Structure formats: structure tokens, C-alpha cells
Image 1: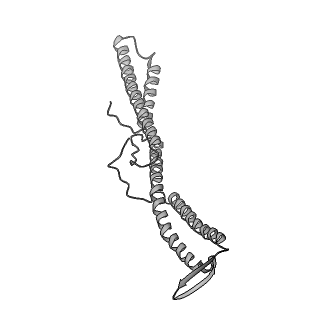
Image 2 (image 1 turned 60 degrees about the vertical axis):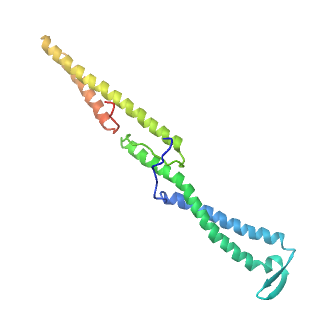
Image 3 (image 1 turned 90 degrees about the horizontal axis):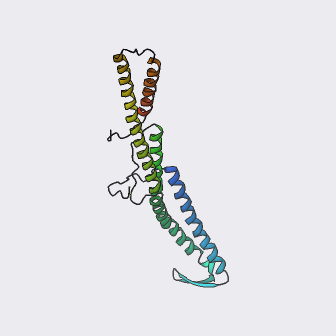
Length: 205
């Protein structure tokens, strides 16, 4: 879980709603910042004059008004180029969050269906590694406990059958113990059915 150099996620739009919302918000923030810059610049330069040489003509006027077209064209260029960069950066950054969220959700769905054999594998720069390690550790712990329960349950079944056979061989009769033995065997089968509802590694068996 410390590093995943061989795991590469190729789909950058994993959670379109989540990533799209963040991309739109950051793009809107960049656009508002650009407009705010125009407003602040115009306010502080409202009492100044500027000289502009444009198309062989020399013009003089109040700074915000005479430079308005230049500022506007520059700001639109900034919004387009800067906005594109914001989109790319936000996409990469949210991808490091959306990817793990997708893996967590998928693994939790599998756990709810009884499959605890899957490992959450994240990329080196993904967020949520601590949570992934804890979920993997929980699945490992639960798998180990299920293995122990399965072994104990199997021993109960074997011991019950041996006891039944011993009573038969002893000539004492098993009819007095039949209800109790059947109850033990039924409980053992029910426990095994519950264990079989889970999918987990059985290498240690």
C-alpha cells in the first residue's frame, strides 16, 4: 500500500458531476478575479490620464476609458488561456480525489455483497491512502476471523459426528441425544452457510 508504480488510471473523468462542479467553480472564480481586476484598476486609475498611440494616431484621455478596449481584449485572452489552464489543473487535482472515491464506493458495494477479497489499490499521488489502508486492514482482519470460525465450525461438525458414532458403537443408544446432536449439527450448518455468504481468501486453510 505504500506505492503503486504500476497502476495507471486512464479515465480522467471518473465522477463527472463531482469533477465538473469543481472545474466550473474554479473557472468561474478565475473569471470573477479577472473582472475584479478590471474594476480595481479602473477605480484607482480614474483620476489619471494616459497617452495612447494607436493606428498612427496619438490619443489622450482618462486612463480607464482610453484603455478599456485594450484591457478588455487582454482580459478575455487571460480568461480563455488562464481558464483553460485552470480546467486542466483542476481536472488533474480532482482526479486524485475522484479516483479514490470511486474505488472506495466500488469496494464498499462489494463488501455489502459479501466480497471482502478485493484490495483498494491507489496511485502514488492519490489522496485517501490512510483510509484505503484501514479498509484493506479491516477486510484482512475479517477474512482471518472468518477462516478461524470456519476451522472451528468444521471441528464442531467432525466432533459431533464422532460423538454420534461413539454413542452408536457403545450400545448405550443415541436416541436420547439425537435432538441435541441434530441441533448442534443444524447450528453448524447455519454457521457455515453464513460464512459461505462471504468471499475471502482461503490460502491459510
